[in-house]
Length: 392
Image 1 (cartoon, rainbow, N blue to C red):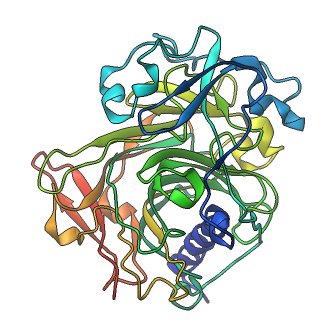
Image 2 (cartoon, rainbow, N blue to C red; image 1 turned 90 degrees about the horizontal axis):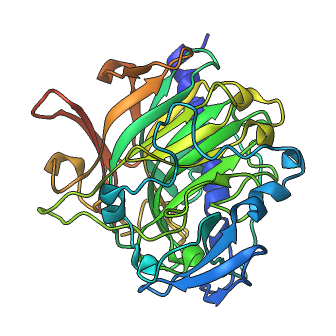
């Protein structure tokens, strides 16, 4: 008889490996991207950031989300029901985390949203159904240092965490390194698996930017034909006129200033929309209709946080110098290692609850390359440090 912990480990790796294949889809062949896509429909103004990013201001009602077949009768929710300020309130702290140079000439007009112009790639998007039970043998170039929390039933209403931002080095142009939060529901390895995902990622092959960018992601059927990054396909709804997935982020300094992003994803029980909030500011949401009656239509069962790298060299992540997090081992601690803190789950009544270390299951399949460590902060705050320099 299998232990419950063994089954949870299997579930965890199935989620990560399935998402990893789809998240690394742009690294499956072809050349480094450099061509810009055409401006999206509904564009009313185009701006340029100092780093070269092109930002199209798109009529909020003509954004890609509303092209989804299940969104034809969707009513736009401009701010979550619990938020008293509205989606357009200025947030100086959040401004300091993003490259906002594109706003120096006024930003997007009222009634429009900023969409980062896509970078075209010749690399195909490969979608597969996977259920790998032994990550050491079947990681397919991906390595992780992650914690997960299982709620026990599919009624959890969200999660929260503060994640440090870094600019890790990549060994190959087609590699990536990321830190994120997953909210999942359904059985792994099947088309019942559904996910909500957000975090930062350095992936020049996909973004055309040699630095970390903020991203969102989703799938409604176990990565078998649904979901995408950011606004690259219909589904995720952007409501902010100031911030958007795909925008470049500032990074922490080793031994210096630590840049943190406080992120929470919470289901609005009045509409069913899963709202993304950054530093307390609502950015957009995953509408329940894109999950087509599946588990995430009403609740989730598992939360995950941590780091991941893709090694495109063929060494399965055991012989790559692509860094995870800060590129330093977690034993170096605050100011030098990447971390997740303020880890919270939102229960079926909508209440936020702290999570203790004994409620979390950590894993790092290649600990000599990337590892994890729990530490207590000055105020007994639990820190999950993770990452590493890779292996030569």
